Length: 346
Image (cartoon, rainbow, N blue to C red; front, side, top):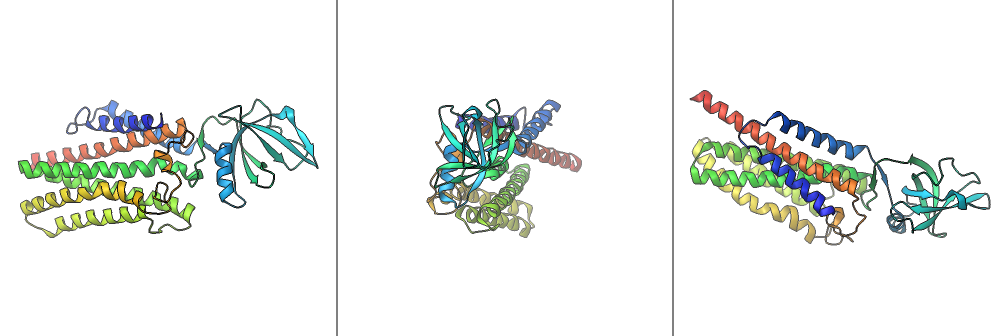
């Protein structure tokens, strides 16, 4: 289900980009659809709460001393047990009612919101000695939207809706730069060279956005913005390759030679993109989820059913759809600008 939802977002973005035409002005309904997709992505990124299930919370707590975080549960307030001035409260998983655990409340009185009719997100810590959760404070009562707690991500799971789609769009943009470069070498139309250049520029912008959002995530999780992790190193090398492409274009004055050489360079440069983006980071050991030494394939490729819930998968999918459509919108604007310049010259 997760793969299907994300795949539909990718296909929707490509469909919107190529329909009704990549060259003609986009109609009003098209712009409204893209605006709604982008707004929905932002909404599903920042509005929902993050809540962990029992199994994930315990897994993280076993590896991090004094770990505390948000737990999502339903209290069974009719089965209270008072012991030494504290309350032992049975709690039930919101995903599977047959999974029951125990929450320790360090006082005799139970918070008023802890009734069987409420779903609760509360900050708790895990006691390894007692094998029970210890209540700290309530975060939300009956939250409408809840994102899953993913190990190594936590609250930073929100940034995935922009970080990964930006990296994806940069690959699409570089692919189109290669496509327009091939068209130029075949037809010798300078319009194709301009479009190849514009695609490469947009691809680099999105790659920089992917790098910046990744640096924010790294600062929170690893303690510094830059760690020379294989994923960071590969995108840095990719940016250097395309910066060299821009330097090449700026260093040549002859328009025809510039277009021909940069087209050949763009084709060769794209050959490195799949390796640097998809292959190399997974072959080497690193901190990034999905590295060779990572216990899982990352939240996107992981086969665990609770890694991404439907809500997070939907927000993630909308991120792919909206940012992909935005790329095609920018290319469409660039095509129209080129056509206007050609019309003015003639």
